[in-house]
Amino acid sequence: MQRLPAKALHVRAKTHIELRLPIGMPGLAAFTGLAALLALTSCFQLTPPKDCQILCQPGGDCPAGLTCQQPPPGMSYGFCATPGAAMCPPLFSDAGASGMEDGGSDADAGEPLPPSMLCHNGACFSLPDALRANLVLLLWPSNLPPVGSSVSVWPDQSGQGNDARAIYPSAPPVVVADGVHLDGTQLGSGFVVPDSASLDFGSGDFTLVVVADLSSSTTQLWFARKSDGARTNSRQVGIQWMLSSALTGRPQGAVDDTLVSANTDVAQPSTAVYALSRSAEHVELHVNGAVLGSADLPSSDISTTNSEDLYLGVGGITGSPVDSLETVIAIRGSVGSTELVQFEAFLRSAFATPAP
Image 1 (cartoon, rainbow, N blue to C red):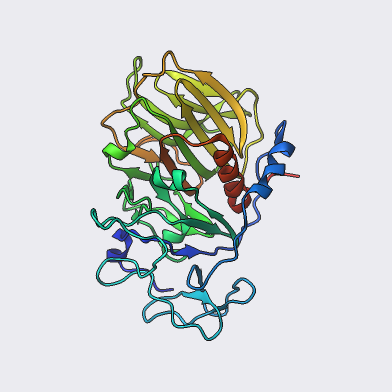
Image 2 (image 1 turned 90 degrees about the vertical axis):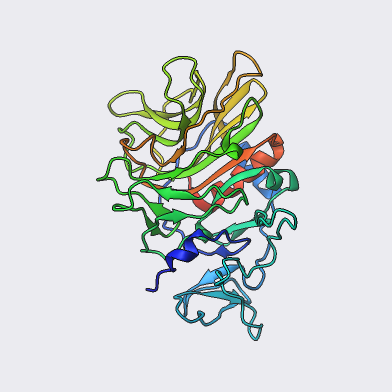
């Protein structure tokens, strides 16, 4: 299998989209009110993909009406396209820019814009303008090399340049069907995103979303964390898995010194959508779209800005890692409740399968 050249890993692509087959893992046990949430899944449209939007390997499956084109020289994948369509442009170009067009670019800054649509496992979601404009981190599986490759850099597609880098290049994460697998034998195996102004939320609204897999419910760990490490009067944003006993656990969000815990122990999910969302002084913790906990900050002007890096899949360079990361998304600014419900429902349908 041909790996993408290291140079290509630093390129922020625009709207290339990859189809990966589901791995059939069980998901989070049903929550109270989940049936009402599922009724809202009809609010987003599963838009039929267009030519040159889905990666494929020769002989692999493509959506109805599309076939897999021959891979470009030196690559192990091609694109799904209508039979007889012109050859799709390469995913990466030697000039360091994507050949795809739908993502657009900022003519003044020269930075690529986030994709207007996200697709995975055959499901697609058109990003609302407000949500798309406020993306500051978008790590999506389509921006990974082929399955089995090691990942030293996971390029950010938000247009902010917040690329995630392997904390330990000697033990890098490895691409799996839906994302990246972290090395459970290496403490600190995960990614780090260097501190940037775009990832400092101040006292404003934000939403942090992580789709991740746990191999065990009996290990305390972080899905994502950006913290100054202070014991009191801390400045931090993070989502972690806390232990309730030797056998049970529950997710927990952190906004400075305010902790938002799930209101009940939950079955350890194989893959789930975790979200921490702040609106003024109110904070909510979601799992698979269900609100499992909420809290109010001491005041609406509490700032979370700090000068530390953002760790993904691990709480720091010595912590235990999650089993895998499927996607990590950060939105700086207000997100409408309906839009967030729809977005989480899409992520749940694309990555997380609830237990029957």
